[in-house]
Amino acid sequence: MPQLILVLFVATLSMGAFTSCKSNKKLAREKEAAAYAAKVEQSKNDLTAMLNGTTSWTLDEQTKRLDTIKSYNIDDQDVKDLIVKVENKLTDAKAAAARKTEEDRLRKEEATKKKAEQARFSNIDRNLESIAKATSYDEANQRIEAALHLFATPEIPVLMIISQAEGFNDYDRPTTISKFLNYLKDRRIYYYRVESVKKDSHGKITELELIKK
Image (cartoon, rainbow, N blue to C red; front, side, top):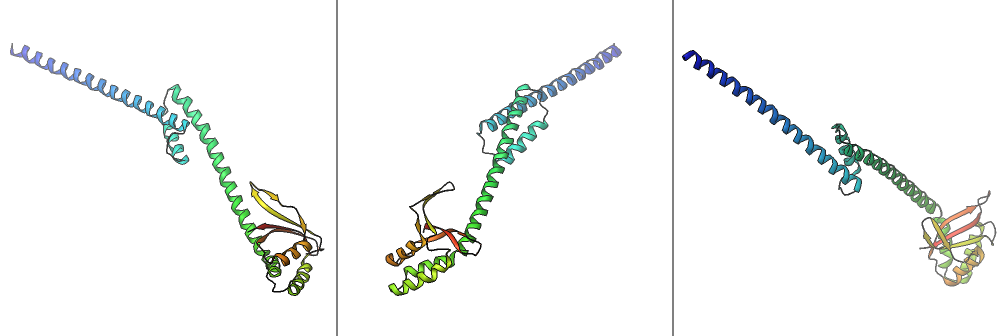
């Protein structure tokens, strides 16, 4: 009897250990399945948010999150479809960002170039302003005579920019340099600045473009 009881006791312990082992494995599988389901759901949510543009993530942050989701190798068709769509969207966004960066660079380059050009035109501005600030008609006429040496002829066109928008200029009625210099003499004020000039092979100005300050 004592031996039988011992055998039964050992058998009972073995059965309990086996059952406990099966329960632990089942629990582990359930936890793993729950974790996988949560990862799938979170991935869907994040991908949908990126696709709809409802995240506060930067482009780089979205790219990193997409790479992380792809590393999960999730076997879910919805997730796979969303990955493709988000990849396409981010590719387009990166291309647009690159274009904007290049456009900004070109704008800054153009602004720097224009500023340098305007610095070159400061001598012309000073000559024109000196005519307007002359203290007498005789002095103004002398300065007009000196200024005309900068131009190819007294009849070269002077264009007045009255507005600028999206790279296009709107002009007032054109005049000639001779008329404009006499206008400065009469009005005694110069509120323009040189925007651009064209010159001939001798360095004489053949066209003058002005804009109001």
